[in-house]
Image 1 (tube, rainbow, N blue to C red):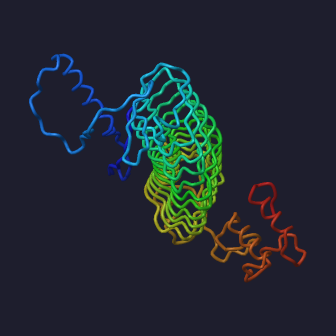
Image 2 (image 1 turned 90 degrees about the vertical axis):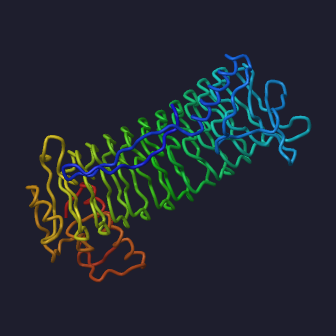
Image 3 (image 1 turned 45 degrees about the vertical axis):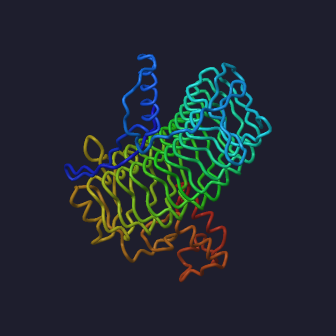
Amino acid sequence: MYNVKCYYILIVCKKQVRIEYKRKESGFMKMKRVATGLCALMMVFGGAVVPAVPIGMDTVVNASADSVYGSFNYIVFGDNTVEITGYNGSAANVSVPSSINGKTVVSIGKYAFDNNHSVKSVTLPSTIKSIGICAFFYCANLQSINLPSGLKEIKEEAFMNCISLHSVAMPNTVTKLESSAFCGCESLSSLTISSGLKAIPDYAFEECGALRNVTVPSGVTKLGIHAFGKCKGLESISLPSTLTFIGANAFYLCSRLKSISLPDNITSIEANTFIDCVGLASVKFPSKLKEISIDAFNGCISLRNVQLPSSLTTIWYDAFYGCTAMGTVTIPKSVTKISPDALGFYDNGKIKGFKMRVYKGSAAEQYAKENGLAYEVISTASKSKGDINGDGSVNVSDISKVAAHIKGKKTLGTSNKADLNGDGRVNVSDISLLSAYVKGKKKF
């Protein structure tokens, strides 16, 4: 399995826009195959002179051959530190030395252990600061490795396709994690992510099918594209309030993911983020959300009780296509654009039991009329109890407003809608009743 990169092709067909992803091989792997081919030719021709050819821009030329220490190849840097560049042994349990000839070992170089199928465990010394590109790529039988305190970076594809690796505990000293670092580690069931990271890169944990529960630490602001895609065993993930962006396909095909709470600073749910998350039943949407992109929740057949925030303006093509359990959904009056097939449809036509609650003259009303979908118009002068913000529905936004009122942070203009128990005051009892109503446990 080679590295995958992603680029978008927009296809306009039958009023639908879809984003397709094409995968292309990593430049590193291409170079490696070219080098292997050249070596084979030299062996065939017995060292015959090869006609001179230009050296490409990506070609790396070493001034001297690696040195050897036991089963390890290594190079010495100008500061007298050492990088392990290769391992030629066949041991199942490997301990990397902390020093060679008095010089400190600080890094595992690119391809140092790649495709080694003998090693089952690796012990790294506390001196290691960097793990290079493809350093342990497809070490198919590698079950365990310690990541020492003091480690600063894990580079691209470092542990990609280590299909037997069970546990990863990053020290908080890790501040740089590159794309596809643990992609395809299908046995990875225990994961601790460094609190020193600001971003989870593209494809970082894609196809880690044994992951069940993940906590993304506070301080992380970005999840890259495909970050947890095809983690088919993932049941829950905790996202920090610092998160502001989740990339396309970040959770696609996470079929056992049941619920997710999206931090309030996220303003867009990108294309295909939750596509075919068939077990996803509950989503807490960000309070600052502005748009839901193409196919964001396409195929989420268990999704229900959708509460869209009053900040939302755009729902793009097929955003909720195939969400057959959706039922009734209130579209905020802030929504000004709903693209074709965004709501109410699946492969066989209109979804049975689907209904929209809309505001008169709104984009949502127009969408419902044009597509022949069931709808009801919300009175703009709604005085229903519990509808604190007057958006025509009682939801978590109303709970937040009452809580802020009780804490003295923001006074309600009128409190009669919030006095649910009729005692003449607005207090925690009213919040309890409001919460029970939103959860469907009680009615006013």
